[in-house]
Length: 131
Image: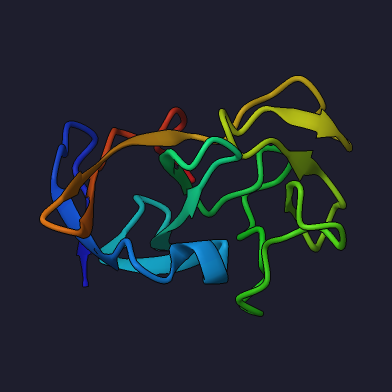
């Protein structure tokens, strides 16, 4: 695996948009590593208005994946992204933390569009590339 340069704006095919309604959230491995050596992943989902969103799978409290490698990033009620380690809850629409140790912070977001029924994610540099 390679390290992602800070200026990277690579486009990722995150799979078909079909099925995201049922899955609610999909974790996609990027095939690159952060400068820390940690494999990078994004969480792709449809927000409450059906708009596609993508966030770095990395808690804002401490740099650990929200799912802790379980693949499960949803709160029990299915209304928020959940950090399984810290209990932080993030909104689907903007990744804003509404509860938990990083309340008021936001997940790193990436640009998303639907092209020919596929979810395309344009990666933004991480807010804090050391993670």
